[in-house]
Amino acid sequence: MIKALNIRLYPTQEQIILMHKHIGCMRFVYNWALARQIDSYELNSKKLSVTDLGKQLTVLKNTAGYEWLYEVSNATLKESIRDLDKAYTNFFNGSGFPKFKSKKKSEPRFYSRYERIYFQDNFVNLEKIGKVKYKSDYDIDLTAVTKFKNPRVHFNSRVWVLSVGIEDTIKTVKLNDFSLGIDLGISKLAITNIDKLDTKNVNKTNKVKKLSKKLKRLQRQCSRKYIMNRKGESYQKTKNIAKLEKKIKKLHSKLKNIRLNHIHQTTSKMVKAKPYRIVMEDLKVSNMMKNKHLSRAIAEQGFNIFINQMKYKCEKYGIKFVQVPTFYPSSKTCSYCGNIKKDLKLSDRVYKCKCGFTCDRDKNASYNLADYGLV
Image (cartoon, rainbow, N blue to C red; front, side, top):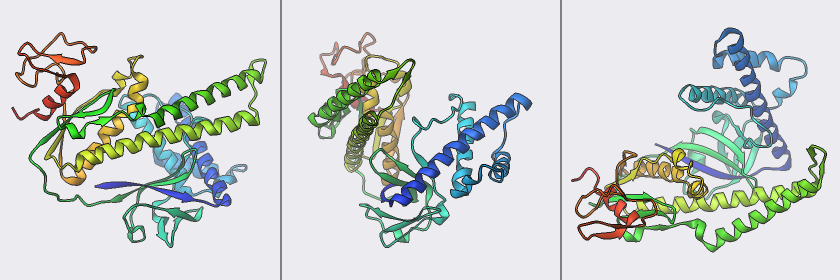
């Protein structure tokens, strides 16, 4: 299986400039390739292959005025074309049509050739960037690793990070004889059939509340400054606004990392309980987000991230991972007698069955998930 690593980088000022060049060139080639695809379809009703675009890119690099494309790694530019090809594949599978990348909105990220990456003496070698100082808390000897999967360097508004995948072996551990049912929620992140594994909602902690309040205040200040500096139909971006936006980005990054860390700790705690299987619902988060009253709370909980982490951690420890169908009535079914309460409303937080069984709605759902397929 593939294990993902996020490694903190400490580039010099010269290396930072080169990294930003890689990001800009990758974005430029993506937009250029998308324009070529659109023109090709309008003229011939055909989609250009990665090879066709690669040949056209070589011609572009040798055109007067585009010599600056040689300042970055060729592998980085080719990967941008492959990224666009993946976006087109997703479009044909039902996703939205690929969009042109904006310098303001697109994530600052670039691909680095995996064959040129190696770790040595607290430095990692990146093609065209050179040897960059790094720090890692992983209990892994990175100098002994020779193969890396999909290496990407990105800036998260605070620090530079190298994300890579490496081959990891599946650990053989002795599992316990209980099934763990997990019901994801809003008031709590996860409710299980084992009380000690229930997990709080990190967004309700004082630390996150204070940071969210500070974020709102800075966003209001930034909005007011834009209005104050408005000239006609255009908005002027001053140095003070740029400073505020930098603070806002750092706060967004900090909140994101707190939530991600909470999910990591939660999923690790559940996997280390060593159940022989873990059962969850196959949630359609995109449909859940259509509820305007709950969409923000659902987005902050990170249900998709939780499920994906649980999948690969179960695979790592040899635990069977089961996802029940989306419309399985886990909340409406009485975990004691099996009766289905069809008139159960979303506002009913306590499940009361005619057999006399009373239980928290989410806890009842976790009992049903744990027993799914066993009865």
